[in-house]
Length: 178
Image 1 (spheres, rainbow, N blue to C red):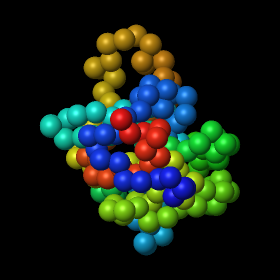
Image 2 (image 1 turned 90 degrees about the horizontal axis):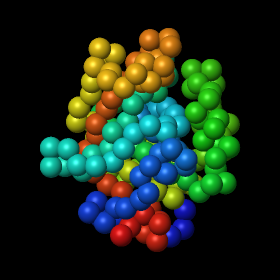
Image 3 (image 1 turned 180 degrees about the horizontal axis):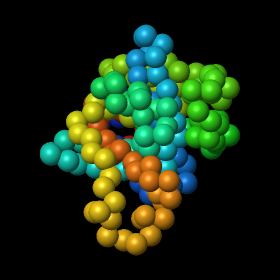
Image 4 (image 1 turned 180 degrees about the vertical axis):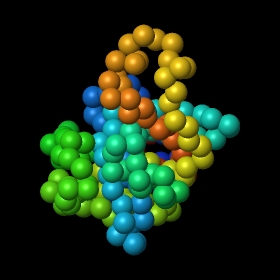
């Protein structure tokens, strides 16, 4: 990972949550780096918090995404944030499918081994959150209360929600640590 990237204690982890997801995005990667079997996708919906008295990351993945196969098969995933200059790379990873080619190589990002999980992180990342799956559930449209939610699912491709326990965080302490 980039210079000035250190271990961040989970209780010191801090970021502008809404802005980080909505404006800056994260790169979700699941699979096994050592086996060379993994895929990544850009995500803008999710969150960080506390569940069952454990630090957690929440992500959602549509069944139509190639990453869906990996997030279901493997037990770990990572969420990486990047400096603004990597926005074009994240755009490639969010709009192209890994089924159709090597979009990670096309993006110019360099996967590297994570500290403790099987899924990779990226050399250019300024933040890497390593997670182990704890829970999943599929969205049920019968439970949507706000009327605008259904408009996000014109094709009926309801997300699978996954909650992962945050096991390890590395990043730029000046930006992601309190």
